[in-house]
Image (cartoon, rainbow, N blue to C red):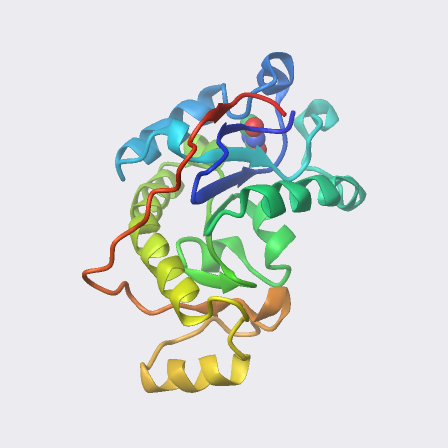
Length: 218
Ligand code: URA
């Protein structure tokens, strides 16, 4: 199940893997978790059609278990190619497995809702909606964290403006961050040194990409 949404979306939302319903329908997040995801996005407000939703693994793990590391590895080239083709500016990971795919030293309980830099994109790790359905406190965190999406988009615009062709060196970024007194999660060296971003800049505009169209399956 490859995913669905707008192929020109600035935001890619990445869950863990298809469940039973997703496997049957060939679409991501069509069950109860999907309903909560829609509600969360509506609060921003963002429509599902305006983002691209996919998963770390493309086939349903048996008995709804977490994907195993070798399954994540086997699906890696597919997700990489999707990111290459769609080139999202903001990647929202849902749950631990998805966050670890990009930020292996991350801890979902500490890093959820943080705006991080990953390679030349912005990473916003969120709890998985299924966890929000089980635990009201996590649902509250999800409701707060998803509201950082506009800020994440602003950060991605600033990132593109700062480094149109080449990624900024980590050293330069560190100096700037020190000047701006940004705190940073500890032990954050892998995944291209994901870095905390400053609160959003004001008076920036987003450019709408042309050629929006909906994509069910590739
Ligand atoms: N959970 C996921 O992680 N992905 C889906 O597509 C559905 C449920």
